[in-house]
Length: 276
Image (cartoon, rainbow, N blue to C red; front, side, top):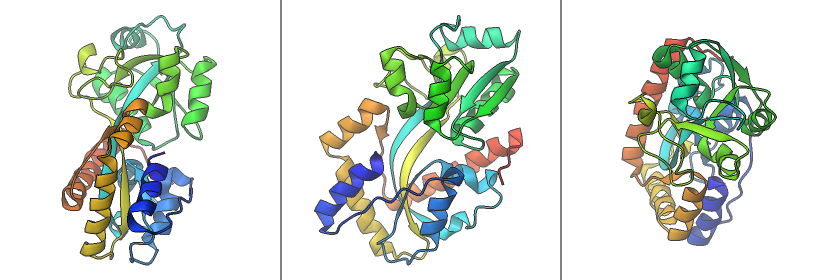
């Protein structure tokens, strides 16, 4: 959604046709590999998520190095959410963890090595000290379907994937791994409100270019993308599904990406996740 929103507006602003080509697979590595090997002329850019930072440590055979890409812009951020079937007796995260102290549980994610999977494993093992069994799915949608069918005890996904189900009542949101509540699901408390302060896990959406793309091209793309995301219509569309807009220069965005790589690396190493 973010790629198509930005792509359509870039076409208008730059007078160039922007085509969004879906390259799903391998936790985002297929798309990243394609862009890393593209000509550094500004005509091929990557729209991706925090998976790029996660894969720096978690993925052993990416087919590219993270340094083969440079940050153009980070444009939107959304927290991870833990959600359960409405029949679950736990009414909030505190009750869910209390029950988990007595009996292990299953939780679904969009796949092994995804940000929500790693954030959840780290929280369950290192913070809450409970036992869980991870059930990986081939994406967020199948995980949501399994939760609605009550086939797993919980799911942990990036909020926009689950926002419609939480607002409609087919799933109950128990906690957001963020510093504050989110306007898309105002009744879902944060982990901190539930007694787990400082637990933050989420995903950004960002744009990247081949590493040798010039500073001038990167700065131009960054400025245009930021202007697009500052439009009220764009901000409303993002916030409705659970994203908060981000506005940073390409230099500041690159610094944040570098920090994010280090933070995810710490969590990946702590729980011992490795993806071929």
